[in-house]
Image (tube, rainbow, N blue to C red):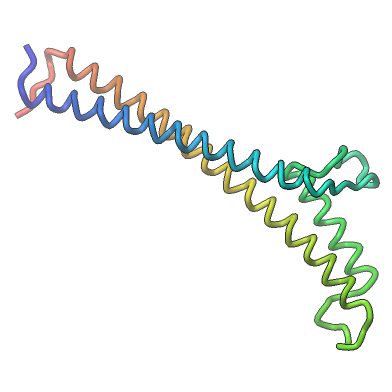
Length: 150
């Protein structure tokens, strides 16, 4: 026989589990949705680089490809022009460096965005595990005859 407090605990656990599973779905959906949004935005720009020793295949649209390209841009920029702040104000290369820095920044933002979406997906998966655990715990509490709540 289930006492009122035991029944209440079981209901609370199951409800917490269901709520957690709903949040799991929302977080995982948002993570994949935003990850796809970033990739689509990168594909629109059609940025590619053929000399990355196979690290970039076709259009840059993944975090690892963006990281490789950002490093390549930084390396080329620093080798060829040096640090932006060390250039004279009337140096004609300032505009070229600014364009390279803008592309680097966009790639770094994409890398950051992919990282955030990965964290969101992982949080969603964790919420799913917690939700399932709560639901099973609620079922165990509801069916158990040995648990005594006072």
